[in-house]
Amino acid sequence: MIETVTNKLNPQVLPHLQVWGWEVPVYLFCGGLAAGLLVISSGILITRNEANFSYTVRLSALLSPIVLSVGMFALFLDLAYKTHVWRFYTAFVPTSPMSWGSWLLMLFYPLAILQAVLLYEKQLESVGALKGLIGFFRPWKKLLAFVNVHIGSGIGVYTGILLATFYARPLWSNSVLGLVFLLSGMSSATALMLWMAPEEKKRFYSLVDMYLLSLEAFAITVLIIGGVTGSENSHLAMMNLITGNFAPWFWTVSLLGGILVPLSLETLETMGKVRFSPITPALVLVGGLSLRFILVFAGQANPTFF
Amino acid sequence: MSRERKYAMIIDTRRCVGCSACVFACKTENQVPEGFCRDWVVSITKGSFPNLSLVNRSERCQHCEDAPCVSNCPTEASHYQGDGTVQIDRDLCTGCKACMAACPYDARYIHPDGFADKCSFCSHRIKAGLATTACTQVCPTSALKLVDLNSNDGQAEALLRGREVKIDKPHAGTKPKLLWLL
Image (cartoon, rainbow over all chains, first blue to last red; front, side, top):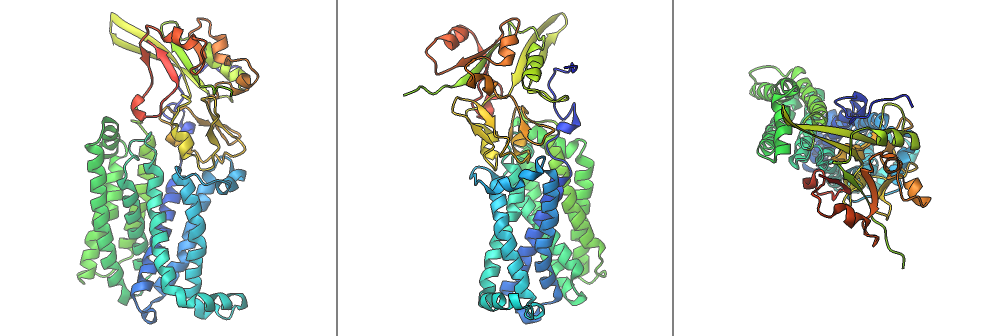
């Protein structure tokens, strides 16, 4: 044994001891986006006449499990013991949000894929194996969409709750985080739909996104107030976020660039003052991704629980 | 009926000289990979010159009675062993790091082989009937003692009697089982 270091080893001394790297924020973003796509497309399926659907709703339902798979791949890359990934499904631990999430994802995939198949029934009916499936579930399409609104919301909230239950990391230990990530995932999904939508449908998605971005801004405000007025641990962690090394990114990229600027642009676009631009949804998506990165990294930085 | 054990560690900060023998003993005994440690020594200096006081504290996993690493582990890899210790089943561990994020004491690390690792109170030695850990056995000032809080041998009571006892981060509500004598 030649090593002579005997003091406390932590991520501030040795960065390789950091808990989570880029993979987890990417997973949380993709999970939220996939959940949002499922919730919004299911909501439209329940409330609107399918005959009037544009390709956007169908494409969103199809994209939802695909985007989730991208996130799951990132999460897989984060696992230190990759060949043991199946161990998530040999136990159910009610006190572990990660366990809940693992099992909830097992519900998400078949139901989201089934909904996508039903929405593409005209194209898929000729596939022999799917004909019977489509015929069986067609009468239950709205009920399936109703269930999917809840499954999607569950996954959206889960991406925040996963962090919020770690009270050892006071920045994350805030129950509003689940709501923030749900709303952020839904606004990102609506922004993506706005991007994909044909010109005549853009106003609808823009209005929905304005509503969701406003709610997200409100939820983030509550998150900040809750942290600043919380215990000494929570206070210092939140002050580190809003005034420390991450603050410039948090204020400019996540809040100003990811919420306030696109909210203003969407207002002008829906009023017809300016043309719909792909820059607006791109800003929302970049803002949503940056929010996950900043919260995951800031949550692991000083000051930790003391 | 056999009595259930409840292992804890009592650490006398007045005896500890911060020599780090406990760290080296642990690294050797448990083949801890280079760059990592299961225990470590914290030296805290208080006051201003010339009125300074120094406290050395040998730290490791607290083997909490209400351990957030156990409750957050999605695969039951982190578990209570029944003798008051918290252990990791390497066969069940996925390396998801939820336990690391959950631990208020930052006691865990990811072993280069992929599983979460930490102090086990030398469970292999306890199972062999040694009733000492590598760190307690090597400590030159007898500052570290592994005790069974459920035992009737009076060892824990004798060590604690008349001494101020500190536990780390009691507000975390984890009921830690490292007891520092001030």
